[in-house]
Image (tube, rainbow, N blue to C red; front, side, top):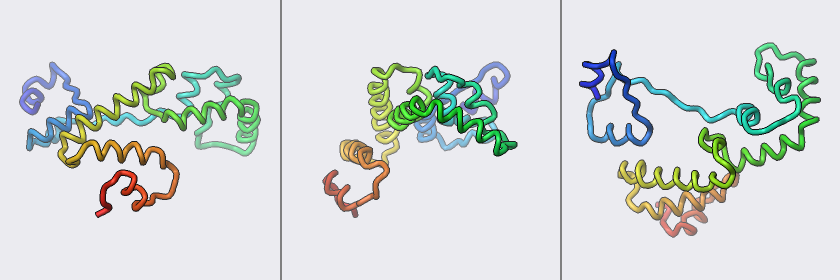
Length: 171
């Protein structure tokens, strides 16, 4: 990559995504400093999900200038009435967002396709990133850990209970 970048920078662009960059980093001691640029994809905002996937009444006026620096009390009162009129729909949307998250690929799929999408993310993460990094020796235990901890989101973490469920020691 360093040679390609140095010799052909004006003619080609190279894109290396998440897992690929881990493999390359492992095989090379080169940092690619001054040659690489990181681009971070942030999760979708709730407003983006609503605008693209739901047909709310007054949707445009609901989200326009919502995050402006110059928010007045009157502005908030107006938004409150709009939010209240859409509260049932917004409640359903919030539940769906809490269930599916805000990953980009999630919302471009039908609800039926989403479960398979999440399974493929976990499989790729476990098989490619975790196994390749060598940080986890027993991938099945780690997979069990991920599954069990996903059922405990929002609860107090009890390491003793968690270790007995996964059947590994806390030490």
